[in-house]
Length: 578
Image (cartoon, rainbow, N blue to C red):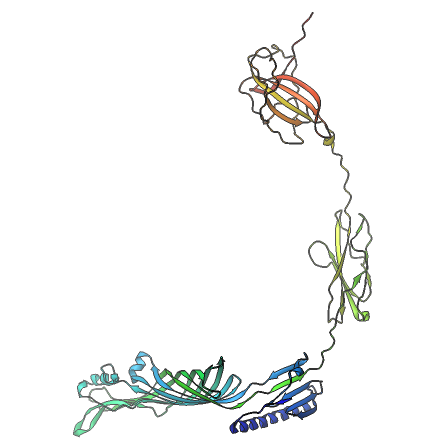
């Protein structure tokens, strides 16, 4: 334990004693209230040693209050169950502000009193608790009167003109300045800006005693007497409410003294009296009028502050009673088979089993939730139980239709409604109705590859007026393995063409795969421009590797583009008789 020598002034000691006396009264009243109320903890014991007071309460809380000049070793409050708090530092601050006062008025109001800049001086005394304070302000400010009140726009000249008096005959009175006396109270704020600068803000409101300026004019009267034309005087009721806002930017010259700049704004109302001669012709009556005008302005100057009676804050250590042991919920272990699939048509329902992992399973309650795996996230059945197994009631239907049905369920542990464990989950399902076996007939059909050669121009029909045979109408060629494609023209081995052919060609014009070997002009092969002769060759394809296995047919045919469906086979030349 270490002791720090406190260097405080006599005024500070007196202030501290008064504060301690007030604090003792507050503590005594609080203890008396605590004893009368059964719900508040009572003091079990209180011991003071070496400037540290240890107070033990009936609820187990221990509070250590450290007196000014003492502190506890840091090892004391390293425990996480200790709260350390420090009361705000307290002190007094007196600030004197002096500078130039500038009025701010509307144009018509300014033409009433013709005020100009003057001076101000204010003194504030604040008591601070940390950065916040409360105090009182007393001050004085005055404003001069411009010579413009003698001009043609003033009330004096206007009154004289109304009565037909020449302004050159007016005699103006001596001027008395405008004056304000202030006595206000309000809050304050002192903000440190680093080690050397601080910002003080004072907001005060209260009483302002305002005295309007005094000026006027007369003209020579009968028997050497002066006749009043106009006069402005302070009102008999000078007290009005007002407000002052001060902002100080201070530089700390020392621990107690600071010097800086001040900006100040104020606002109030000013009562005044005007006396003027009745403007009625032939009347010598003086008329008196009471009036009030707004009054405000801005002041700029210097600020000097001094702190005294400084009292360092006390540090309080609170030893809280140990917190109750937290309630922990442990995740149950599932014992049911996960991912089990029931056959189609089964009406069996699973039985769900689990095992507790808590040291005190008698305090546990298990929450079971069943979901359908459709992404909705809404349980279709849920139940809370203390058992380690559960069977679904008869009114819960699981299998619906011939499609697959998948479900999952979760188990959670809860203790007295104070906690809820994480969920342990598993799934099960029902198989769909088996699909019938369909034999693919197309797989057993024969496939053929056919080619079309030639394209030679024919000058006449071969075979006479009656055809030897006519090509059978073939079904539409439906490629089964690949779409029809045109090959790059290539020449077949040349051979002699039949008689009547103007020019014979051996170019392969078309090649494709089909299930019908009968000829039909392909829809994607352009028709010739004139009757022509083509050669048609068909080969069977192997069912395993789709390779040609042998020639099925090969013959020539005649086609007229005007009758594309009337394809005529050209018979082979008959053998000569011996």
